[in-house]
Length: 515
Image (tube, rainbow, N blue to C red):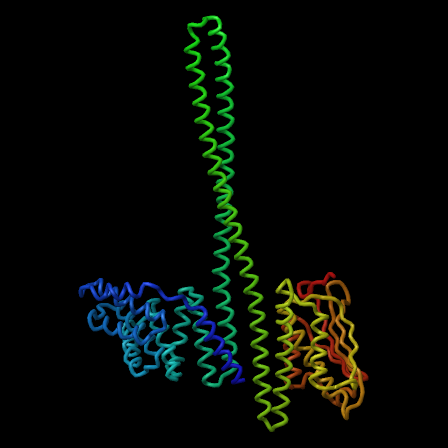
């Protein structure tokens, strides 16, 4: 269990490093400006900016030196400036493990909390710096004292990212104190909040692009309507002009050669008007073509964002599968150093449970939908894995009756763990002294929108006097809890062997798989 939480901490560190923004590129310009600056407010702003730049470059020792220079030349004059300066100095000191200096800055921030008295949202940055410091220096009591206050302020400000950090600190604190169950619960809350923040950002980007697309489309429609109206007016004008020309020609014919020169001038004037009108129409057509190109670009950007989301989901399943494989390998390595058969068996059972989950994420990574897996393929692979793991050879055979179904990940994990527990118990206890036997696995549709999962064997059965309600083994408690999770109940029968069955009746649990 300790190895699992150690690996989780390392994984979180990797994600935080990948999520850091790139450093600014104008450091040389800032240093040159600082050299030529005068001791006024602009110099204070330059010192602060350079410290932020070195922090972004992970050169926290240099950042701390510039913050000290800022403190000496421009001491903070109010609570806001004091909070801003000493939170940054405390963060830099902790990052370079200079805890003696960090203690002084932490004391400054604690004085701010004591002076302000009542809780307010301006105290949130203070807690954001103090809590990591106390965790890093193993002052777990102090950290535990401030965590509820930080959680309350984060909820009051509706700051999802800050709530995620609060759960992460709870996870580190519980892990260091050996409270692994509470640590795991806080880690799950942290992961859910972190995913929620990323999903909100992605939804806002997609909604913004969609709104831009519809706005541009409406503008184009309005432009097209205006253009059609303009063209109709031009045509009407041309028709009227044509009638005037006809009448004018008649008058010229009657009037004679004297009016011929005037007629030539009128014709030339009309030609110029038509040429100008054509130029305007061409300009409008060019503008319409440009709008079309912009709309096509926006549509392509939207498609790219959707492809990136698909890739991210695929990458998450791939990383979860790899992380589970690493944990399984670590447990396998640890078991090599154990002499206790019970401990060795417990580690082996934990490996089987994690492998059953790893198969699910492997199938999700390989599937096109990224959300559903084929139940019959997954169950076949799980049975093959358990057969090879226990090295049963041909002594125990498997009979399978599996309907083509697709499971989502929230249902596949409980089903996989129940299958793992039931098949493992049958292999270990149903056929003592290496006698031959058979295990049957069935997944079928019993009526409309109702499905049944059954695992049975023809072994020695349960001992006399066995009562499932009084059984407190890990495997039995795990199967009962997983059945409640998917809205079902565990049915156990002891008749010429042991039979376990689970009935589901919810059309949202499964979707028929169409070949």
